[in-house]
Amino acid sequence: MPLFNVNKPTNNPISAWTRGASRVLAKTRILELHGVMYSHPSRKAETEFSVIHTSDWVNVIATTPDRQLVLVKQFRYGIGAPSLEIPGGIIEEGEEPIQAGLRELQEETGFVGTHARVLGRVHPNPAIQNNRCYLVWVENVVRQSDVAWDEHEELEVITLPVDQAYALAHSGDITHSLVLNGLLLFMPHWLAMKAP
Image (tube, rainbow, N blue to C red):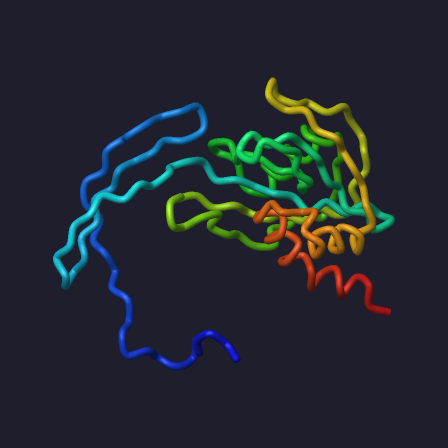
Protein backbone atom coordinates (compact mmCIF):
# COMPACT_ATOMS: atom_id res chain seq x y z
CA MET A 1 0.00 0.00 0.00
CA PRO A 2 1.45 3.43 -0.93
CA LEU A 3 2.32 5.89 1.83
CA PHE A 4 0.00 8.48 0.30
CA ASN A 5 -2.30 8.82 -2.67
CA VAL A 6 -0.97 11.58 -4.94
CA ASN A 7 -4.31 11.72 -6.77
CA LYS A 8 -6.38 12.39 -3.65
CA PRO A 9 -6.23 15.90 -2.18
CA THR A 10 -5.36 16.14 1.50
CA ASN A 11 -7.27 18.19 4.07
CA ASN A 12 -4.10 20.04 5.05
CA PRO A 13 -2.26 21.37 2.00
CA ILE A 14 1.18 22.73 2.74
CA SER A 15 1.81 26.47 2.75
CA ALA A 16 4.35 28.35 0.69
CA TRP A 17 6.66 30.15 3.08
CA THR A 18 7.68 33.73 2.27
CA ARG A 19 11.37 34.33 1.64
CA GLY A 20 12.96 37.26 3.42
CA ALA A 21 16.47 38.61 3.82
CA SER A 22 19.54 36.49 3.10
CA ARG A 23 23.08 36.79 4.41
CA VAL A 24 26.31 34.96 3.57
CA LEU A 25 27.49 32.91 6.57
CA ALA A 26 30.52 31.31 4.91
CA LYS A 27 32.12 31.22 1.47
CA THR A 28 34.43 28.57 0.01
CA ARG A 29 35.88 27.72 -3.39
CA ILE A 30 32.84 25.66 -4.36
CA LEU A 31 29.89 26.94 -2.30
CA GLU A 32 28.38 29.68 -0.21
CA LEU A 33 26.42 29.01 2.97
CA HIS A 34 23.55 31.49 3.34
CA GLY A 35 21.26 32.21 6.25
CA VAL A 36 17.85 32.83 4.69
CA MET A 37 14.86 34.15 6.60
CA TYR A 38 11.50 32.50 5.87
CA SER A 39 8.13 33.29 7.45
CA HIS A 40 5.03 31.09 7.54
CA PRO A 41 1.96 32.82 6.06
CA SER A 42 -0.52 31.88 8.79
CA ARG A 43 1.52 30.92 11.87
CA LYS A 44 3.62 34.08 11.59
CA ALA A 45 6.69 32.06 12.54
CA GLU A 46 9.93 33.47 11.18
CA THR A 47 13.12 31.43 11.13
CA GLU A 48 16.56 31.62 9.55
CA PHE A 49 17.37 28.47 7.55
CA SER A 50 20.76 27.39 6.24
CA VAL A 51 20.87 27.12 2.44
CA ILE A 52 23.89 26.02 0.41
CA HIS A 53 24.33 27.96 -2.84
CA THR A 54 26.45 26.12 -5.39
CA SER A 55 26.70 25.61 -9.15
CA ASP A 56 24.54 23.15 -11.03
CA TRP A 57 26.14 19.76 -11.69
CA VAL A 58 26.09 17.16 -14.43
CA ASN A 59 26.53 13.38 -14.23
CA VAL A 60 27.02 11.21 -17.31
CA ILE A 61 25.71 7.77 -18.23
CA ALA A 62 28.26 6.82 -20.92
CA THR A 63 27.68 3.61 -22.84
CA THR A 64 30.13 1.96 -25.23
CA PRO A 65 29.14 0.27 -28.53
CA ASP A 66 29.47 -3.13 -26.80
CA ARG A 67 27.07 -2.05 -23.99
CA GLN A 68 29.57 -1.30 -21.27
CA LEU A 69 29.08 1.54 -18.80
CA VAL A 70 31.96 3.91 -18.07
CA LEU A 71 32.54 4.33 -14.33
CA VAL A 72 35.14 6.11 -12.25
CA LYS A 73 36.45 5.28 -8.81
CA GLN A 74 37.76 8.20 -6.79
CA PHE A 75 38.49 9.16 -3.21
CA ARG A 76 35.70 11.25 -1.71
CA TYR A 77 36.64 13.54 1.17
CA GLY A 78 33.11 13.67 2.62
CA ILE A 79 33.12 9.95 3.44
CA GLY A 80 36.90 9.54 3.64
CA ALA A 81 36.81 6.57 1.27
CA PRO A 82 36.73 5.64 -2.43
CA SER A 83 33.41 5.84 -4.27
CA LEU A 84 32.34 4.10 -7.50
CA GLU A 85 30.51 6.61 -9.69
CA ILE A 86 29.62 7.77 -13.18
CA PRO A 87 31.68 10.69 -14.50
CA GLY A 88 30.49 14.18 -13.66
CA GLY A 89 31.22 17.58 -12.28
CA ILE A 90 30.30 21.26 -12.18
CA ILE A 91 28.48 22.95 -15.03
CA GLU A 92 30.63 25.97 -15.80
CA GLU A 93 29.06 29.41 -16.24
CA GLY A 94 27.58 29.69 -19.74
CA GLU A 95 27.60 25.94 -20.40
CA GLU A 96 24.57 23.88 -21.33
CA PRO A 97 24.18 20.56 -19.47
CA ILE A 98 25.01 18.41 -22.54
CA GLN A 99 28.10 20.49 -23.32
CA ALA A 100 29.23 20.20 -19.70
CA GLY A 101 28.56 16.45 -19.67
CA LEU A 102 30.63 15.85 -22.80
CA ARG A 103 33.45 17.98 -21.37
CA GLU A 104 33.45 16.24 -17.98
CA LEU A 105 33.34 12.80 -19.63
CA GLN A 106 36.36 13.57 -21.78
CA GLU A 107 38.33 15.30 -19.00
CA GLU A 108 37.76 12.55 -16.44
CA THR A 109 37.94 9.46 -18.67
CA GLY A 110 39.26 10.34 -22.13
CA PHE A 111 36.01 8.98 -23.64
CA VAL A 112 33.97 10.81 -26.28
CA GLY A 113 30.69 9.78 -27.87
CA THR A 114 27.57 10.65 -29.84
CA HIS A 115 23.82 11.14 -29.39
CA ALA A 116 24.12 12.99 -26.08
CA ARG A 117 20.83 13.89 -24.41
CA VAL A 118 19.47 14.93 -21.04
CA LEU A 119 17.70 12.07 -19.25
CA GLY A 120 16.41 14.33 -16.49
CA ARG A 121 17.36 16.64 -13.67
CA VAL A 122 17.14 16.33 -9.91
CA HIS A 123 17.61 18.51 -6.85
CA PRO A 124 20.51 16.83 -4.96
CA ASN A 125 19.18 17.86 -1.53
CA PRO A 126 16.35 20.42 -1.66
CA ALA A 127 16.26 20.62 2.14
CA ILE A 128 19.54 22.56 2.21
CA GLN A 129 20.79 23.09 -1.38
CA ASN A 130 19.55 25.31 -4.20
CA ASN A 131 21.24 23.60 -7.17
CA ARG A 132 20.24 21.00 -9.73
CA CYS A 133 22.05 18.00 -11.18
CA TYR A 134 21.45 17.08 -14.81
CA LEU A 135 21.76 13.45 -15.88
CA VAL A 136 23.09 13.11 -19.42
CA TRP A 137 23.32 9.94 -21.54
CA VAL A 138 26.09 9.70 -24.15
CA GLU A 139 26.09 6.72 -26.53
CA ASN A 140 28.82 4.97 -28.53
CA VAL A 141 31.63 6.28 -26.35
CA VAL A 142 35.22 5.35 -27.16
CA ARG A 143 38.47 6.37 -25.52
CA GLN A 144 40.04 9.01 -27.75
CA SER A 145 42.17 11.27 -25.61
CA ASP A 146 44.24 11.58 -22.47
CA VAL A 147 42.52 12.58 -19.27
CA ALA A 148 42.71 16.15 -18.01
CA TRP A 149 42.19 15.96 -14.26
CA ASP A 150 42.31 19.01 -12.04
CA GLU A 151 44.83 19.22 -9.21
CA HIS A 152 42.55 17.43 -6.72
CA GLU A 153 41.41 14.59 -8.99
CA GLU A 154 42.79 11.08 -9.26
CA LEU A 155 40.45 8.56 -10.87
CA GLU A 156 40.46 4.92 -11.85
CA VAL A 157 38.46 4.54 -15.07
CA ILE A 158 36.47 1.30 -15.29
CA THR A 159 34.11 -0.15 -17.89
CA LEU A 160 31.60 -2.77 -16.84
CA PRO A 161 28.64 -4.48 -18.53
CA VAL A 162 25.59 -2.34 -17.78
CA ASP A 163 23.80 -5.17 -15.96
CA GLN A 164 26.84 -5.62 -13.72
CA ALA A 165 26.72 -1.92 -12.82
CA TYR A 166 23.06 -2.30 -11.88
CA ALA A 167 23.97 -5.33 -9.75
CA LEU A 168 26.55 -3.18 -7.92
CA ALA A 169 23.89 -0.55 -7.30
CA HIS A 170 21.48 -3.14 -5.91
CA SER A 171 24.17 -4.73 -3.71
CA GLY A 172 25.12 -1.40 -2.13
CA ASP A 173 28.55 -1.16 -3.76
CA ILE A 174 27.43 2.01 -5.56
CA THR A 175 26.19 4.41 -2.89
CA HIS A 176 26.38 7.88 -4.50
CA SER A 177 22.77 9.07 -4.65
CA LEU A 178 23.21 11.02 -7.90
CA VAL A 179 24.71 7.97 -9.59
CA LEU A 180 21.69 5.96 -8.46
CA ASN A 181 19.45 8.73 -9.89
CA GLY A 182 21.26 8.41 -13.21
CA LEU A 183 20.86 4.64 -13.27
CA LEU A 184 17.16 4.99 -12.41
CA LEU A 185 16.54 7.44 -15.26
CA PHE A 186 18.55 5.29 -17.69
CA MET A 187 16.72 2.05 -16.79
CA PRO A 188 13.84 2.32 -19.32
CA HIS A 189 16.32 3.07 -22.11
CA TRP A 190 18.46 0.12 -21.08
CA LEU A 191 15.48 -2.23 -20.99
CA ALA A 192 14.48 -1.05 -24.48
CA MET A 193 18.04 -1.65 -25.75
CA LYS A 194 18.02 -5.20 -24.34
CA ALA A 195 14.59 -6.11 -25.70
CA PRO A 196 14.68 -8.72 -28.51
